[in-house]
Image (cartoon, rainbow, N blue to C red; front, top):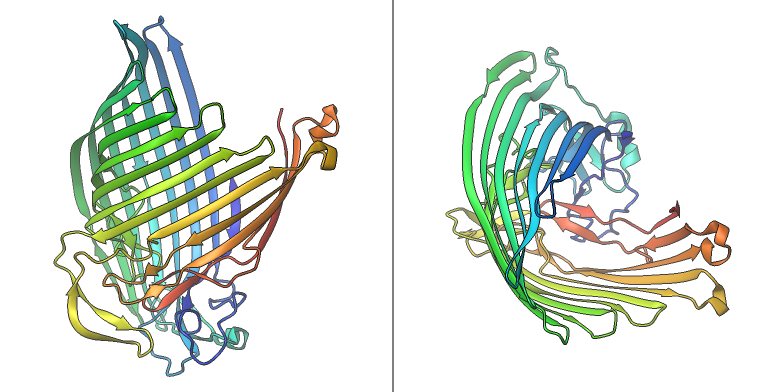
Length: 499
């Protein structure tokens, strides 16, 4: 797959988007970056083989090997909130670039099968998977260029914008870091699914061994003064055993209560902080209990579940360094979800869901002051982050979608669909200073099945859809200084043929 260059969504200042400054909102069409310095290109390749052999009705063998390579190059800029422009409508933008060439090799080998012990049936699997991940990467910042752009008339500023990435020029202040990062994981796993009448029990476990290493060369050019340092990290071996268990009972009248408990260990390969340092693996434990109800003799399924999750080394957006993640330490999330999936009639289908998620920082000795976006200043005593809500995660989300196929005696082959999406408010920082507001979006679409008209066209379908039908101006997330605008009205279509 080759994507030579897409544009990148830029940040917008909080003043003029979330906060009114006495003028209209900054239009969605305003580009506040550097022209010619706003591209992202990908080259991706993958090879895979799958092999399977059945020894007998009790034992089977399978193996999957995959090799992947991904090259990514990006040039963009970020809002430099540390530069004072002296004008409310003028912001400073700093250019930077990033490129990486990631290569992953993985091999999964397993034995699996089925057997019975009296009235109890077992579906079992044991296996080993191996993964090797190398991701050399390079990023560079132009710290000497403060490009001033008028948020309401950016074109007028374009002729005065500049960038300098030379490590020898006396007019440049630039910082770059070239890294060689590698990650290795090997795991042994097993699982048994046990069934007896309406009861199903799942038991499984996994032992992982992981090793990280990083070599880094940092280069500076401070207006002609060149410096270079090595910032290498030795190998960081880690290992963990994780397991899971769950049970569900299917009653004859359609009700199925269930309960599960699981622990997790997930290497966060490919993610680094702004210094290029890899993050520790994500570890956690989860309880979940719920009910499923399938209406007898009808295509209607209702589900409800409640959960509690503890996670360590949970990643959040770095509110200080744009484009990077930060380790939030321990995070505790709990909540519930309800959903309905129903074919109400032969022609009408409805899907609806609601979720409530309360996600907060766990034990922490980190403190922060709250921020006032109107005065652009911090105030009050420093507050502990412990117990505060994790920023940029909505507490409430709701959606409903319906699809109606028009009866053939009215409009043969035609169908309509529509939907509503609600995303609740989110906090902007780690001490709940203020919120990004909630929003509601509407979607509309239509589809046509050519096979309903002619059997020779069976499998040919066309669809057109409109997202954000009202072209609502909304914000997906904000920090204390910047916001990200949601996508405007989008019309797209596709033509598919299946055989």
